Image (cartoon, rainbow, N blue to C red; front, top):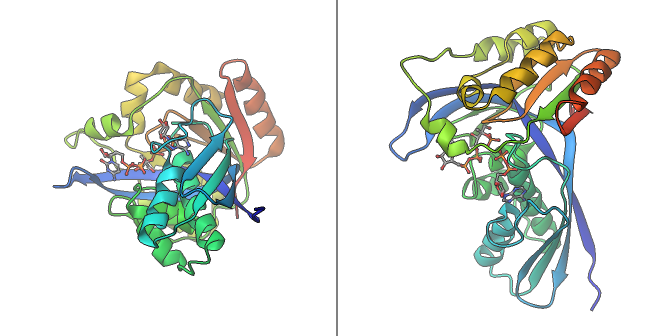
Length: 286
Ligand SMILES: C[C@@](CO)(OP(=O)(O)O)[C@H](O)COP(=O)(O)OP(=O)(O)OC[C@H]1O[C@@H](n2ccc(N)nc2=O)[C@H](O)[C@@H]1O
Ligand SMILES: Nc1ncnc2c1ncn2[C@@H]1O[C@H](COP(=O)(O)OP(=O)(O)O)[C@@H](O)[C@H]1O
């Protein structure tokens, strides 16, 4: 039998700020961070299948196609919770670099929650999908919500914020892997420089690009940078070639620069291409 296809886009996020307040009893860290979505996205399609299975097809060899895949977990969760007897085939066209600090897997999970909600007409609200998303990962609720938000708790308590002023985002991911868990574990609360989250929120509210760039900050950056010199190398190259505000995203290792002028974004992009195999120049998503 031929079934209709549903399509969803899964955009990457960057952290404009990331602060860690304390370690919680459940092992997670209490965070306060501003996240925003960028125009670098995976594309997913969803189709009903007659066999009672979740199938993932992806051409990307770094992405698992079994229960380790966050899209698989999202589809399975909805299937079990809503007692769906048919199966789901998911095609994943992966464009977001994997294990990069850009929430690619979380965004695929969020897109899957939206896609399966439509495919099986479950009529779940965005809020309900966010709550289900929190069971899959800390970044999934934000990826369900999209846009720009201040995230608290372990990342799931969200307040919407205005989008950043229009600008370019140049991203470079060094060819190294980091474990988010290991990076959080290395946070030293006796020696921490907290970002000015409120100043960054104000900069968004007043659409002040210069102030936003001055108030980017990520407490995980010095930790990942101390383990991998590529992070500092990319950062300094971006700063030297005219990046307006430069920061590592999430637990890394991707470093990005916000850039107001297109010609400068091109210059930074070209300067990094010789140095790094995964480089992108994209717009913010408004
Ligand atoms: C650092 C951030 C910032 O946006 O992003 P990425 O670098 O992954 O993109 C997130 O907090 C990552 O969120 P996510 O990748 O969804 O984390 P989870 O799967 O929930 O957790 C993976 C592991 O990270 C640690 N963890 C995560 C979130 C948090 N608030 N405190 C933690 O200590 C825990 O050790 C957990 O076992
Ligand atoms: N759909 C997916 N896309 C990418 N990686 C995935 C996916 N599902 C599970 N993973 C696994 O999750 C890990 C983290 O991936 P990702 O979400 O891309 O990074 P990050 O959490 O740093 O933003 C990878 O090691 C990868 O094997």
